[in-house]
Image (cartoon, rainbow, N blue to C red; front, side, top):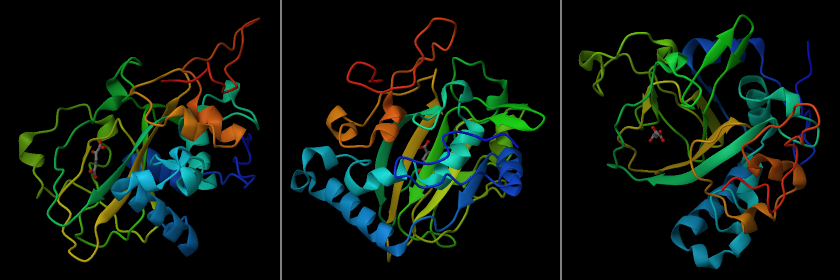
Length: 280
Ligand SMILES: O=C(O)CCC(=O)C(=O)O
């Protein structure tokens, strides 16, 4: 089997390639949930950082004042997430052991208490979109490209009926418009997941998905909505300031380089991050 680079992340941890089962399910459904990727200590540290960032940002140094700042930056290139993105998003022509083959787009922290709703189904059918629309999905026998790809980190447990993200499995390849009669919150076409703290939900933005009402009175939903894209595409504005990126190791910084490739003969290759090669 070919090696997908990089083989270690910015913290020197070995990247974990997707299993055959994970690849099959991701392609079939358009999403996978990977439970319990973080230790209890990591979850506690990241939760503390997120709560400070949300409720008292001035208490943090400027380089930590972002969803992906400070101790939370390890989520950007967690070894399991890199394994998934190497397989589903990376442009491997310009990936190396010192440069990722994909880009980070943007992030936000969601703190959702009981009663907060976010039901607004969108997306689906991305297999039929052209490349100017990053919400696309492409496939050949044995290989897929997931386009704009969402990684949702669940920092608190998501239990049955709590109100995790709802996903319309398979809709990234759906040829027909979604009928109104199947689109309601109560429709049984929706799938969802339960997971312990420190889990990641990963889905192609080509898939129809929606938030819903958070119902758990005992704990809020605390999630980080991270977005990745291939190196030559950019959908949104970057939400991570330069001073936050400056505090990261060089390999992690390559997630924030400009959106270009340039891998042809005698051309510069986009395999570095610096003050000028930064995607705003
Ligand atoms: O709120 C959620 O669970 C999903 C959010 C969503 O659909 C999105 O960010 O595109």
